[in-house]
Amino acid sequence: MQAADVMTTNVISVTADAEVREIASLLLEHGISAVPVIDADQRVLGIVSEGDLMRRVENDTEHKSWWLKLISGSSAGEYVKSHGRRAGEIMTPKPVTIGEDEPLHRIASLLEKHRIKRVPVVRDGKLVGIVSRSNLLRGFSVTAPDTGLDVSADDREIRDAILKEVDENTGVMVDRINVIVAEGNVQLWGLVENQEEKLAVQVAAENTSGVKAVENNLGFVPRGMSSF
Image (cartoon, rainbow, N blue to C red):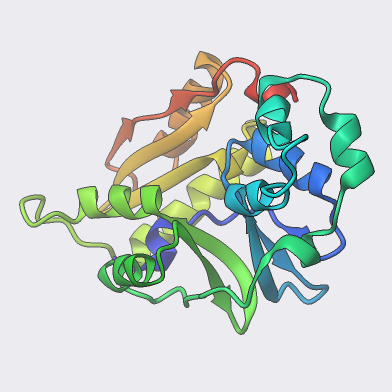
């Protein structure tokens, strides 16, 4: 199994001139912990994580808790706006990237070696996905020695078809979900808003040609997370 089999394809990203308050809003709205910073050609310039936002004010004792206040929904927006900086100023530059054919075990080694939680996936230098620790764990769960399962080109076509159907026809935020396919067996992971969306993703998967079985592990977005 390779990066292309587990990566999140609809990547939430920002440009170098994105303001801190915009980045914070994106992290909260989509339930993610980091966003890649890209240029006009979709090339990865850096990554902004929760840690970068925290370090942004680590020496400001008076306002040190602005990020926590923002998460809790208090009126920290004015402070962030008045003290905001750009993604290009606070990002971790020149991040580690991988190709779509990178094996999962090598991705795991990269995350461990560089002490990072996620790695952008590029094709011809352009951003096409991102692999996080949770993506890896889901992939490993499918390809564990006792499962006897393997991933084929057909499985990747099935995965792409499911994600496309969900994105175009269900109204579900596809960047919040992940689909793992091995020998036609589908696992659904991630977060949706309600039971109707959970069922919609399952139906989309079940109706996709080549799917043998669907295991629906989708959970629900914590109350208030998407309303920021």
